[in-house]
Length: 173
Image (tube, rainbow, N blue to C red; front, top):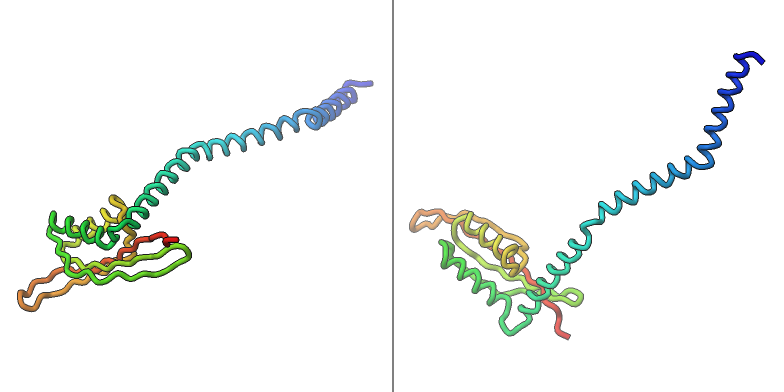
């Protein structure tokens, strides 16, 4: 046997050994490595889940507290009116009109819609909306309509804002 033929058999033997070793042990190791990497990614993805669930439960408890507060003797319209008038006293807003409340029944809940008309500065109205919906969580602001009107006697322009405020109440069983 000459050197060329012997080297060729040796190279073929090495290739065959690599294929066998890959099939017998290395392929299983590679599969386990990729599975491990995917599981570590999933663990990292869901790592903050318990705190998120805890935060959502706290928010749900706060919302249920708000709902139960509105079920007491004081109506939510009165609470909203108190808050809006208190906010108006601190600033330059003026409560112009408080029409009656409308109710809409949904499965197990009543949706109460209150309309408030306030007059004042745009920035102050936005602050009122933000405070009611996000800071105090008194209601959900379903809509706001801004109209710039002119008083014919004084020739002054002012901003009239109609706020549509909604609350959800549990139906009493």
